[in-house]
Image (cartoon, rainbow, N blue to C red; front, side):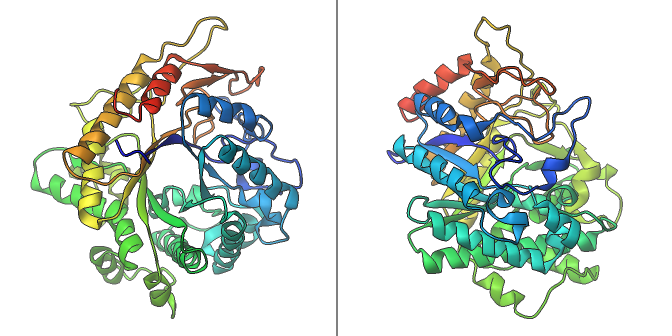
Length: 454
């Protein structure tokens, strides 16, 4: 394996930090989401705001050399468009410096769904170009502030989700009819923000690296029927290839643009947007990967937008094992997309989220025997190595998701991805003790020998 290969962990701010109302932090949309019978609120998470030294020590003990974090926009900028909050910024200074002290390379993501509440309520989030301006200004300030210490950057976590119905939950959207026009408008606005920040970073700090990131869930045809093959291909074009083409060429997929034109989609294209997109500068193509799926075209309504095909045609793959949460386990799919992405775009590839959610509990005494997690990561790392050494793909690193337990993206502590157990439930914080699982020691060995032995 390359000597400069990155092994590490990825998280978001709201799933780790807690401290939702401390040190001048203004509210985000997550701060007002209540707990339910099956979920937690976002007020405490795993309290990394106060326990980051302990968590970084665990990462160092696991032999990680990269940690991908997210800056909470509402923690560092009052209400998203106000004054800089020095106390909030000081937390990220401490966190980054503590990483560097341990020889852990920081990667920063600028947005992971947590729109400042004021901008959601007053501006409808990324529906508004004013919010785009506020976000770009925030991003520039963070890039300038950390440029001397942070080389690797991401703008939007899982950017292609803004081209799905999930966009209405992650963009600060608070009013509207959830139309295709609104979906395409928000997506276009986020792409303009990405292009502007990637251009700024390279113009101002040419030694830094910016990556575009998608949530890669490849859709296979459910059968060999031509219509299944056609719609699976078209779904992948809209959800995955469109973003990678934008990142690398500054232009929408021709197929996407044809659909927009033929269906008279109003996505707020304005003079100057073409030049803004053309200024894009991407150094690596990053993605999350957890599973694949299949698409049954018989279930898809006629004339549906291709980026919504999976809303109807999604089916589990009968040939694959499933996780505790019924997600297909597909290591070969991981290899396929690494190789495909590198072959198509000739940029380094970087899987920055990979993992399996499991139902686990700790009895307070015995080590959690998470052999399923070890098997999952062993198979996926081997698939990545096959893409590198057999297929010739250039890969920068491998980052697991939430390798210290955090609430899931839907606020469920029962869905655990970590090699370290955090002692809390959805409704009881307990002592938040960190307890290494069996997989912790497996990762420790794998990362120590740079993945040469699994």
